[in-house]
Length: 311
Image (cartoon, rainbow, N blue to C red; front, side):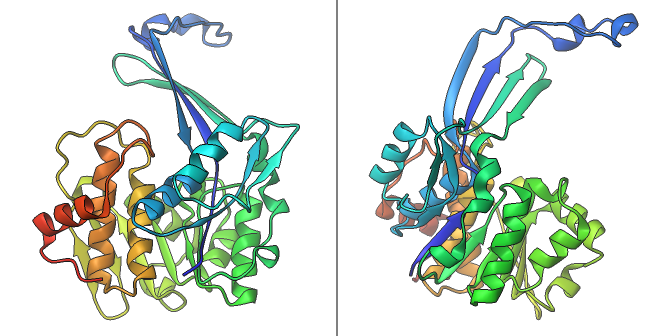
């Protein structure tokens, strides 16, 4: 099965400040803030929704095709993706921009100050499914909003089954844009908070979404996930982690596991469980693509939680 994964490609720059940001905010001078924080550590990670999803699919034996835009600093990242078994032939490198980047400082109490640089992600609309070759399954994951609208429209026009994953962009996109993405999607997926925003903006509840989609998938963190179908709901518990290290990329890993099940023609129960196991591997490591496992290791963990895996 040829799977095309669209979405953002980014670098994450994560820094830690040993004090508290709020101690340096002066209530009488908030109209003019000029602060600089000396941080103790900085970690640069490969990030972005699309590579994270594709990475899990590759770990599970697929060879997904990444369709996204990156900047002049993408060469090392591309080599790493190629070595991981991900097809990057549809990634467009924009030479006069940097790859999208997330800069985040976190203080000792968990407060964060962050900035996101769009960079080459703003060029995502220059890519098209019409130029991508055959596609058996696609996911429209968070990206430049206009590009997401275009990708969903092209999938509908070309008859490509697609998963609509607005996630973080539900706050940015309008109700009509979101409704258009839902219309024609095979599956709609987001977390429980994003689902409420999606429902409010579109005026569509799960029953209304299911007039178009085959399933609505809602992830709920440590409470697991729900796959809402027209005739029933499949609830899947989260797999307990050995140690919860970092939630970055956990939702993306879930999507990769779910898509592996879809590619294999598995039941909805199995699809949800594959997503749950994949998500926990990501939770146990720093970053969305620093973990590794073999298929036998993954299968053994699946069986320890859910019983025999039949694909």
